[in-house]
Amino acid sequence: MAPLLLDGRVRWVSDPMPGPRNDIVGLEVSHVLEGRDPGAWLGDEGCVGGGVLTPIRRPGDREQPDREREFNRHHDSLRVVVERAIAQHETWRVPHTDHRRPVNTFADTSSAVIGLYFSAAE
Image 1 (tube, rainbow, N blue to C red):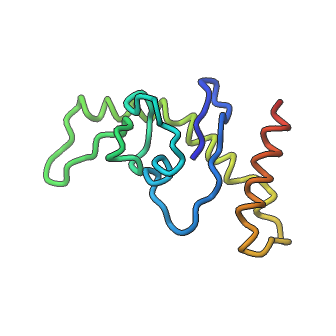
Image 2: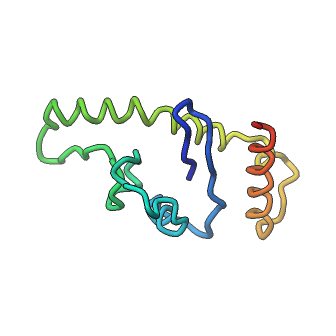
């Protein structure tokens, strides 16, 4: 999870969680939204049910109305900044080198990379 500033810079990155997790689980565990209105945050389909503003799902039995498609286009145009930041985080070279660390040190390695990112950004 990586909340951003309006200019697209990463504001915070959560540490990795064990096992396969849905985005909404990460939000709940991290307490990022405590004391904040979740309706003011944009999320993708992984945040459905958390009160975060998500795209409207297309019903399987009919065409999606124009107003819902327009809402989704606008939502996607705002989310593209977030998706670019996530892609940047996923392409950091340290986790992809041939000299990978043992699996049990992955969380520490990820935390170190995140720390280096923010110290270099200052």
